[in-house]
Image 1 (cartoon, rainbow, N blue to C red):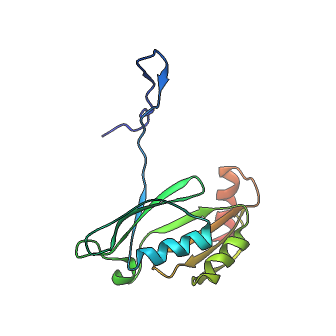
Image 2 (cartoon, helix red, strand yellow; image 1 turned 60 degrees about the vertical axis):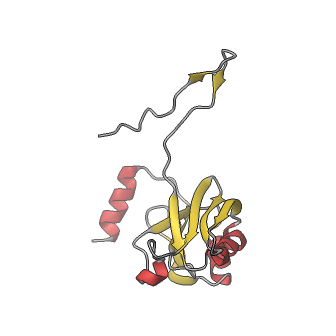
Image 3 (tube, helix red, strand yellow; image 1 turned 135 degrees about the horizontal axis):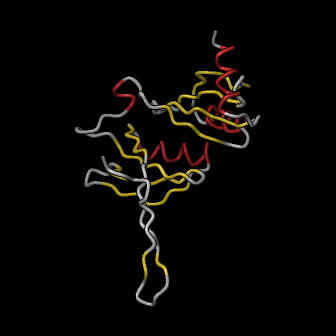
Length: 163
């Protein structure tokens, strides 16, 4: 098994000072039918910032990098190897979006063409949450912490609420 826990390395530069450390990350890569439309949607609804964007000879996006808050995601157009979530009939992945105002973000996702799966509301486990399907087949769990609870308190509330 590979140990990723100690991937932050302190490296000494030529001048004797410390240089940038290398680390391991995981980035979601969303395969989409209409990557440029998705980029515009995520920019409008989520304030995403476009970094890299590369296309193939056919003009389709082969890689685009978006930053949403402190998180990067990658987007590409579907092709003969990578089908989109809409082509597959949906995605088994739910993207959790932790925000300060779940209602405002949920409204922005819906106003841009998203569909409400679960209405945003308060949960017994300390969050205001709801789920929105974007126009490209991905589900976004919009989540706002409204109460600070210990793990035991969350589990107790779930045990009572789901019984």
